[in-house]
Length: 281
Image (cartoon, rainbow, N blue to C red; front, side):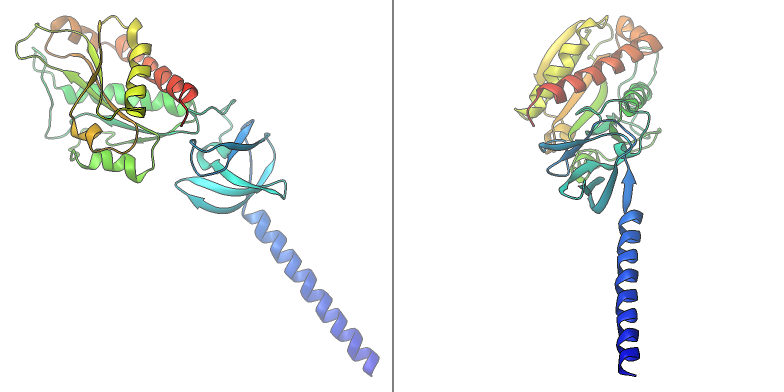
């Protein structure tokens, strides 16, 4: 009787261990992801600003521990613990992971809704063209894998104070506000300007974007200090671009053209890419 009882206890104990092991395996598997991009960076913290601890090839599995700001804390190869950009892990369209693809960028189309912004000589509102360009930039950034947040994606009123707050709350790596300039009298000024408020990373970002834009068919008015709320009250690298004078006929002809909008958007994306590539965060 004693032997039978001991055997029964042993069977129950063994079964409990096996069941516990299976539950743990199931939990690990259900909290794991298969990497669909090549050379995914595992960073030491939840942002592109942290150092790279390892690179993961396409097809590898990662066990997920936790999440913060759309970054996943993972275990790789049963020993490496670090962070990966959640929006990249299962994106098969991204062939090569770059700093730009790991970045979070807030795009701010100026004005909107009740706020028309400046008007062209023919009465066309600035808010329409800031949204057109911003949507193009967002589309091109997303095609590179970037996590993009827009302060507005339609013709609606957005309070000024909430625009920088969007970037701060998202722990963004860059903020770009799109505008078109206006002079006191029609046809008296021309060109584009990249404004920053804070020295350091914001000024570096303005320089990187401005340099890339110099092939546009408008003259560069350079990089300048601008006391604008959306970049002043912002703790992430932030710039405001005036992409031409809307009440100058020569500039407006470009502003409303699809070819200029495409070239402008391409240059902003390239400027951002250069900023992230060359800047030590």
